[in-house]
Image (tube, rainbow, N blue to C red):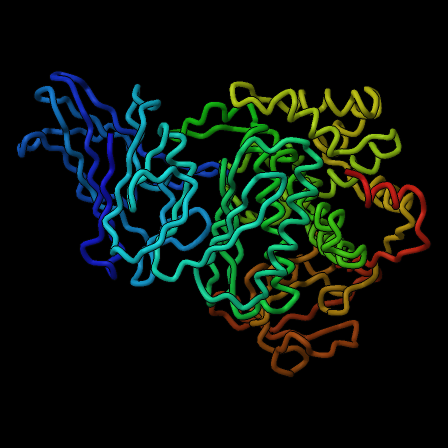
Length: 556
């Protein structure tokens, strides 16, 4: 089968797509469009961006039937080529979408190519109608200038592609493996420094797993002129979208680029190959409920940052700045009291990656990272490590014909940590809803790191338990504070004590008079300070280095 992709009107952002499929007379063909994509366990309903679907054979229309929102069927009238034509609107610029404009064509094939049921393992060619001076970046094998071939459907949808005249390329090598760097957009950083930094964390990760079963890997990086941050993993590549590009010359955003890049490379092993059983093989037509978000994203989030420390890119102080923010995020919410990380993983399909209603669930990324850090330090006391656990996972479940369950991960950890201690930890913090503070802070203490929780500098948050955005809209209210029955989420604070609201307004009194706009109604409300600090910031003090901290930073 072969896809042909062209753009009749570039600025419309529509792609014209033709699929040629060799069929037998009377063959019923079922074409399933994906409803979600790997790495994002929520329904995206890509069919909403498809229009003009039609089937023809030898110039005559073949009747087709839309059996579900994204399943199309038809019966071939005769033996020969059936042509399926449709348009797709490529207007989503993030690491999982597709985009078309006058500068580039960026494709995530998962968004718009059909799985021919029963023929998933057939090779697929893709030909792009592009100007001759367009360069392309993809992990797909190239068989002509703008023609590529995937071994099967899964290979195609796991291989994003960039195409433009301004695409920039560089590469580095580790142990005979080539890592390609593709940049679309303006480069405002030292490429040679970036190559050195990427090579350092790549080497550290490869040493950690001891194996990298690929000859080449591609970092496809969109350098955007506006604020953005996203990454998506693939078997032989990753797409990263980040901006503003001009700020990548500064350490803050450059650190974020390093963080997401290290995170996505770790996914080469964890998720792309060490895969939860529930998504093996992928069925993109329906939900695939998983309970292993703590492994898939929690471990990856922790290890992605940890390898920047272990490889020398981050100093200990740099790493602890990230950890402090993770602590602030974790304990700003009380979702851990309501739902375990296991159930929060399962419920990704219910409310996706949105914050959701107040204090209902936890982040599999943030809480998962803190759980993983805690486990790593506990394992270190047993002369082991989380990376050693993941290496065992790699040896046992790295084969894509296998898959693991949460119980399998727990069993491997128990082999390093002990059955009783592992069972208690999983029961409390992974399957349960206990506060991880005590065990986490105690483990950090064994590294000579003391966590101190102090009232936030913003007194509206610390004393009154109210968090706002810069416009004064209330985004969070501390559930144990004194003002839960005075204000509500989405109230906009217009004035405080007669002064127009600003995000840095000075608040010294223990009683404040607010003028608020509540969905168009102007109300005057008095709020009171709490006797105890509410929202806190976390500071980690570093004492003299000890053997455990030395071993943690240098483990491989």
